[in-house]
Length: 284
Ligand SMILES: [Zn+2]
Image (cartoon, rainbow, N blue to C red; front, side, top):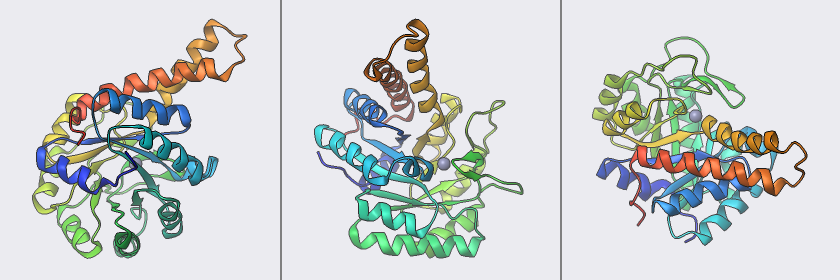
């Protein structure tokens, strides 16, 4: 199956009360791991890369990896730009072949966020590529961006207006999650999520989910989250596998040996999260 867009995947998730996992990949082994996990559970899956990842290696490298993995898979696979930091980067991802694009204008003023999100949606929609935007600030440090200070949570009324004026296809909301590693247990504003769901009718996205207890994630899905992003924990899982091999055999020199161990750890992690978000068996 060739790469698909997030459009139908997320609308089906919204209609049927589950979410699709979106997993950040950093290398070929992580791409293979995510798709292998999805195959094993007959689940649709989204892979994504942040600006710092595509700075490390070009968009084209990650697209090529994802495309090969999707072509060989029997489940729907999406390649998504996570936290697109500018109109220009969003357009580069679009031209490269990414099948879903996020533009993150959440660090701009409300009006500037609308402007850039609408511009990206207008540019991507003629080619059939859906766009995710973010309103409010997810805490912590995502990539090179800092969550910042102030009242960061998404305002439901603003969200309704934002969606109407931008025409975006999905919306990342800030309800208390943070990127990176949590210091304590995260406290999420679930009532706010329900309020947003009441007035916004497009799929909602949860960022900063690494470290959020599975039961809380399930509750978020029940209240309208259709895409759940996991990044930090995949990096931790991959490194755990690599470190274990290195600890056991400090003389190991074949990257295939330790990368395979990293790949196995990522696959296990992704399979577990697919069960949490409930997309197992949902591949069409
Ligand atoms: Zn994020």
